Length: 154
Image (cartoon, one colour):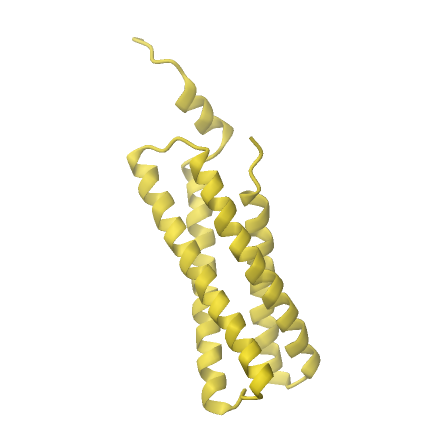
């Protein structure tokens, strides 16, 4: 079975990271094209995050997990869902700011703090996912071979 999760997560990480970096560049330069570019990237990245969570559930259902890896998968899943919801909130706030023209000093700093928190959760989720795959082999063909081998008495 082909899984989309490993593909979608890389787009999610790239789009959302660049969106927030571009946002911080806007904060420094005040050039409007950075604000607009960041908005497009934020929307695409947030949609990608939703896709990453949904395909992550699909990927989880397709692998056999022992209790140790189950705990890691659950931690990665929770972190991914928190990340997705933070970015949904951030994107919603962005459009409220655009509609009501309220991107002023006190609100602006709250927005950027939420963005920084979202970025930390995004990287945490990626690190947990990478550790599961590259260190523990979750979802790899080696793990599938181990789980389908017949027991022996050797």
